[in-house]
Length: 240
Image (cartoon, rainbow, N blue to C red; front, side, top):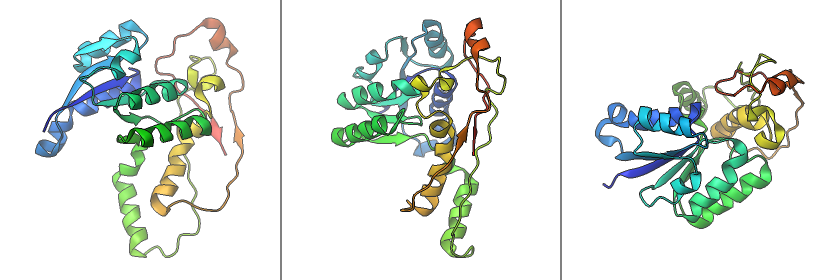
């Protein structure tokens, strides 16, 4: 079997996690693991791109993601860049015949997401989204219990996603806290996991659902004034 050339776009924390995961395929899955090559990583911060190349074993690094998606040695593109960039990168990757794994949320809004999904289907490539909690062992066990009928008819589901990054109002002002860059904000970034769990376990519901959102930290002007550089901020945006 030919090896699969991997490109990772966006070498922040999530991009590094993906790269490390590919490097561990053989040790985790033995002969069942596909052959992969970390061909290229892309990040608009040159120092971060170079650090990822040297630390994680990529063959090369670039600061223009277009070079990565157009590389003939790349078969699959992993998109871990900020939400506002997902649509352009995914559509370009599909146009170049690349398979794509995009972190969630796929787009900033429904329009972006629908366009990306349509492009994937038209390209006829393999695509995926980073709903990793589907594969947690306890989730699999819950599914078995539901399927066995031991829990009876499931009539109600309540999901929560508790996370604490960004809880300091004086912390770094990342793109995650700027609506024009993040889109749906906490709803798309985190609560989409909760919704996916419901769909994954029980299928799509035809009933309408409504909710309310509240931002616990309303002002991050201090962060903006100080010009802090975002690396690994901790956040708290509460969704009820």
